[in-house]
Amino acid sequence: MKYPYPTKKKSFSLLNGIASAKLFCQLAIISFLFTGCADLRLAKTAFKNQQYPSARSHWTALAQKGFPQAEVGLGRLLIIAQENKAYDEQAYREALELFYSAYEKGRVTVVYDIGQAYLKQAKKTGITSQYQSAYFWLSKASAMGLVNADIHLADMELDGLGTEHDTKRALTRYKNLVASGHVKAASRLGGIYSQGIHADRNEQQALYWYQQAIALGDVSAELKLAQLYETAQSDVKNLKRAMSLYEKLAKNGNVTAAYKLARLIEYSDPSNIGMPDSSALHWYVVAAEQQHALALLRLASIKLENSQSPGANREALATYRQLSEQGIGAASYHLGLVHEKGLGTPQNDQMAFKWYTKSLEQNYSRAELRLAGLYARGGGVAQDLKVARDIYRRFAQRGDINAAYQLAKLLKEAGNSGLARRWYEFAAKNGHLSSRYALGVILSQSGSQQDAEEAERQLAEAAIQGFHPATLYLGEKIFYGWNAPANKTRGLSLVLKAARENIPGAVNIALTFMDQMDDSGSIEQANACSKQVHEKIPQWFLCSGKAPEGVSR
Image (spheres, rainbow, N blue to C red):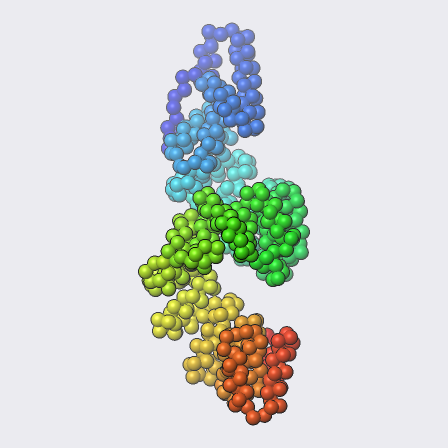
């Protein structure tokens, strides 16, 4: 059989030594065999305890005597040594030569090691032929009943690596592995159904499979289940259960759970955001003490946002810089933000551009959106609207509604209202309130009765959800008559509501409207309506009797 990496001829083959052994007495042969077995046990124990130099020493001596088990061990050590290093083709070549040599000597279970070696090599290089070799050898391992190979085969089938993309076959493999008690397969299924990438998103299925994984002893699945409870978009969502699971894991030393618990406590109560309560701070500190990068970043941000002390600001910035030097892109991103906004340091767009660029080089993709903003206004770099639009468009096409909104703004400013409207519609449909408002303004100016009705619906929805520039604009339009006869009472009530929410210009507009109204009773009615709305009575259109069709009440 020919292999990509030819095997070397061994001069100390045990079998050849015994075949020509007429030089040794039977006792010597038996003694030799027992010594080899003892050394193999020592090597295996050292390997299990991660005492790799000792394992290498034993296996090297035995490999020279032709022991195939020792060749497998040495090959595994070579592969392990490559895990956190840059790609070294020679190391993989030597490992595969050892594996092939053991295979030729009858150590057939080494097919799994050969498949894994090719797979790890392919993940570093991306070379298709290496994925194909991995799939070939892992398939042989699967046929021999080595079930650990099936998890890799299923992963490859799911992504179409080294074989045809086949979601159905991959899912069947995972489910068969769960049935046989494989610990990781159920968690894989949970991830597939929660992400909705390779199969239709199904949070009930994700919940079921994560629970199966936990039952099989996969402790990592508890964190994934907590994340599902926290982020689910269906009735699976249960923040109380998420918090309980995070707390359980955090108390058992899971630093990621401690950080996520702190975030959940902070953001589940709007009054906490920006200055978390003592419970959230406790868990941030717990995670930070274990050098959790995001916890360190959050504590630095809290310090920067809430302290007037120059010393505290310097400490926060030092934390950002230290983490940035460690390659943490989020830290470089925060350094960009503080320079762009002038938080704890003088405002400097050029420095912001420098740090955002470094963050992007550290694979923190959000930094590119901040760079787009700098290109759009010429902050710290020559203005380039095309670059800004291209960046926003790429993110918008991936479903980022904030990028869609920014893209629409630039397109509108460039005079392309038609395309701007499409992106505003996309973002508005996905709940972006500024886009609802902007879309309402565009539609209100078209002159079409149908557009006017849709404009009122979009503006009313934005207003009801608390975006009060829409409240002011809607009040002005209704006061002067738009999409219906003028309704001064209703229009004034909305403008007064905007004034109560401190929207710039609303007070002056309200005074102007009251000067144009002769009936003091209507003014009092409008004021009463605005107070009721301000007190969150869900009768947004009390003065008119009904809301536009399709608007939530």
